[in-house]
Image (cartoon, helix red, strand yellow):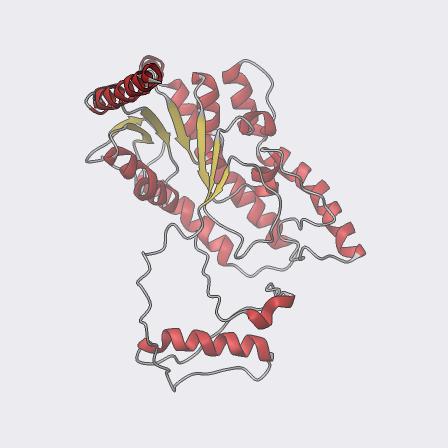
Length: 356
């Protein structure tokens, strides 16, 4: 018995000494070195505020690879910036995206609207593809990237450049994005996607489809294969040339370690996903303020007579929350994609908001 007690005391002392030793040598826990390949505009602003700056605060070294000419991507105060040359001016960039915006705002009949949108989107992709070519043409940049011993790569993969560069450098990579056309952000991670239950993009179908809607869903899925193959054709040629092997879209994208997706299932139909897909919808919203314990009701409100009883109740409860404002003139909700379950009578209040 005494021997057993001495053994237990020795083990406890050993564990205590080991714990103190680990706490006294924080130098063994070093930060990583991350290469960031962003896209310009709101893509970069979201990535910068939500990931890059926070990783810097936690002791990681971050290197951001950007073009010499851009809108929002400039010198950073805390992270390292490496620039590569491009063959356009800032005025060219402004004209290019002015055209892109005007096409999205134009009102054209079908199918002219689809064809026009496809053409301008493909020209936009060509711009980003030329940026990617300039990275690999720059001897100085490629020498720096090969000698820097990065631990991982973070990128918005819509232009394929970040994924190509990660495969070239043999780095694990993380995607930070809203989504791909043709549902590639579901196909690449090999998510189950039965056409009878998962609506394709732009079909405006729900996950409860009729027979003819399922046929339509299947036909659009076939057309997406042709669309995306043509859209990314030049990008895949560049990736195959750089990686010295034939690659497909799925080959290039399915190696992502983590998918950070800037949406959630508030405005999307629920579907099966892979464990490495992290949904971060609402991350760009301002931090919410706590609700007051007592909500005052605003007498200035408007309800539609066409809204059913349950939806009217939700609008009424929502007006209570918004009652702290001076007035609530109009409350408008889109209920065509909302499904109320059988336990709706038990629901006291549910208010949600999605933001990319």
